[in-house]
Length: 114
Length: 113
Image: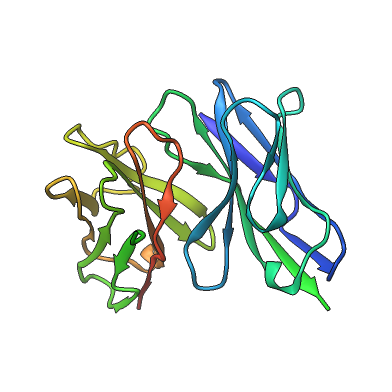
């Protein structure tokens, strides 16, 4: 079984500041890693994913994440945030070679203030 | 093309009633997932369909929950004798065969009074 821990439930930042949302996972098998974003009253939108290869992955809206196998982490970063980035962010994993069902963290609410 | 669609977008029901939630996956996607998003439990996997294979029902919380997928496309999640703790957003996702990336619908917000 897999588990995901998002270390911060809320992250407030000012506009144009950098941000890092932290995610750690636990699994006895190799996993795929994902970050999804959820805007108010909407479904989940895929931001980026790590499947294999380069550990630094780039996604939409200027976000990137780095897979660190030794630390079992997949932190999400953006160098300069905008008001429109205010949303809830979910880290998720799925086991390789499985039915790919996702195990999610509890989410981090990113609030960007002017 | 069109994304995953779900209906209704909102549903209010009385405790003890049955409800049906519908999901239309992306055309051509053979895998379909249901998840539940609630304040207390976060996002939880409920059930997975892949083609004509037997579904993975390991996430269904009780025997009041069931789901079917007709013709390998549309899926219906049924909750019988609803309870207040069933209040949540029910999300559907689909993916292509052998693909690890799931695409989510907007969800159905269920409120049980």
